[in-house]
Amino acid sequence: MAQHNFVPVLLGSDVNVYGMARSFHEAYGICSVAIGKGRLGATSNSRIVTVEVVEPRIEEDEVFCKTLIDFSARYPKDVDLLLVPCGDNYIKLLSRNQDALREYYKFTCIDEQLLTQLSMKETFYALCEQHGFAFPKTTTVTVNNYQTVELPFAFPVVIKPSNSVAYWNCHFPHKKKVFVAETREEFDAILSAIYASSYQDHLIIQEYIPGDDSHMRVMNCYCGKDGKVRLIALGQALLEEHSPEGIGSYAAIIPTEDRQLARQMKTFLEDIGYKGFANFDLKLDSRDGQYKLFEMNPRQGRSSFFVTAEGYNLAQYLVDDVLLDKTTECTIATGETLWTIIPKALIFEYVTDPELKAKAKDLIRRGKLCKSLYYKKDRNFKRWLYFQKNQASYFKKYTRYFGNKSLKD
Image (cartoon, rainbow, N blue to C red; front, side, top):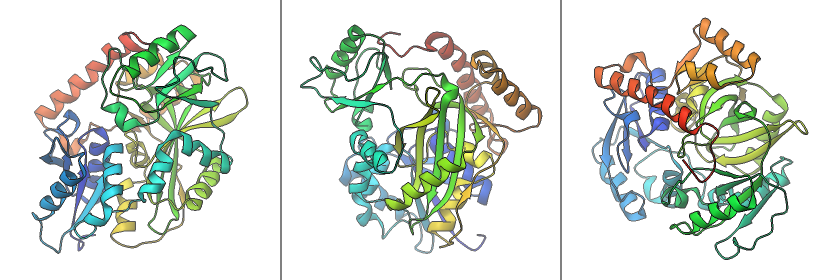
């Protein structure tokens, strides 16, 4: 790679972007640039990534294309610009506009039709059924029928948006990324609040799968531009985030394995012709021992740095495929790391399984603890101060919000 001149151009500015920038820096010693709608603390005052362009209207197709094309003019033609979308909105924009950008950037991307099929929960679950994946009992409601709909399963139920991008952009009191309604009264109140906002798309209603955060699994994959799966990494959540905007996002993960699940996922991804990063959320249902597949993100997840941390650098898989045209056999990750974005004290306070606590302690004792935002090669006073404030905020968040998925603070 010393002779290959390239620059990673990351779309976004959040912790996912920082994780990818850190992956590129660890693998190649190079710095990344970022383009996004705004600036966030995770990528501020960094030596390994700089947010070069902030464009509040970047979610408009014409603005998106013009911003990226104009930015590409900063570099000579012999420099490859490797474009890496790090959020749902950027994935959709790139999928719609990929033909206009291929002259200027190197990237891998699925077409808009497949993206829509995978992003909308209703059509995604139809694909899951075809490929033998179990998923929670599910129904949908609309703005027209939510007041009278009869649910085909009992409470409690999970409420989540079908259109995650539209939901991200809406606002209403006590908004949460995901809700759990224990009763019909709670259900009616939550849906009334959502549909009183700008969000008017479908809502997904699911049966609640019992079990605490440690029943959750996250699978990260990379598929080459030839449609063949190159990497599969499975993680077990120790804790999720519990703040309103963070519910369902992973806060601490340890690697785990399930070869049968990996084979099933490999077949699924290759059958649908997938390309690029993919991220899956699953939950192990103690009632029947099956993994219930919740959703797929057509990108690397915000916790995906745990894969790099356990020894499988995500940036390297992307570069080998897109820039170097290398083909390799599928690797099933088997590393050992405790990845976390929260203070380790919170892990031991809120994780209830003694075996998981013991495993976490053992990994820490052996020096296998990784915090995405704490990188020894990217230290300065301002980042140290940001990191300390970020970590302290989690104590307040867990005290205030732990276990709260209702329409209240």
